[in-house]
Structures are given as structure tokens and as C-alpha cells.
Length: 134
Image 1: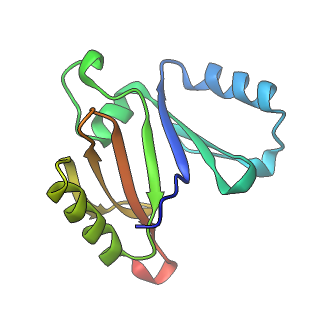
Image 2 (image 1 turned 45 degrees about the horizontal axis):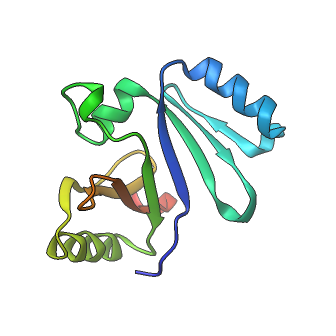
């Protein structure tokens, strides 16, 4: 794993208000913003993205259901080069003492899995799906 954090994902209570706040604060142009029904991504300098998710979706996505006090407050994301690399990194993390929160699987935009480090910080490891990956 090349040490790199490509994305920081945080849960928010009010997605629309958070979008307004960050657009104003960061002075982002429309081409630097991508939104979905339950999230919004801000594409920042040096290839780093800040992604905001509604709290309930954040908890569901990381399979941390059971109260916000037990849910991570952010996700650190590492972009892997392939699905196989995602699996290798998750196995390496598990062997190093991480707790696997969600095994790697394909979703609408990537192949990804989640783990918690020994201090409880949530990591996502993902490989972006190419159009022919289905």
C-alpha cells in the first residue's frame, strides 16, 4: 500500500446546509462539486476530496448502525489500483490488528471495503469501477 489519503468523508446532520457552508467557505466552482441524493463531494487541490454524507447513510454505508455515539466521525480513504489490491490491503489490515467493518464489494461507483484501526478510526479502501467493470 502506498501511503496516501485521497478522500476524507464526514457525516453531517443537514446535507444542504453543509453544502452551502462549504461552497461558500471554499469558494468552489460547479465543476469542483459532485452531488448525489445522500452525499456531496468537493474536489480540492492535489487530488484530495472532501465528501459529506447524511449521518444515517454514513452509518449504514460503514455498517455502524446502533447510535451515532458508536459511529466514526470520519472516513479516511485510500484509492487502490485494483479490486485485488483492495482485497490485499484489507487482509493486511486485518492481519495487523484492524477490525473489518465491511468486506470489499462492488457498489455503484467502486469496489470498496472498510476497516477500523486499533484506535477506532474508519478507513475505506477502494478501487474505482471502470465502465466495463459493471
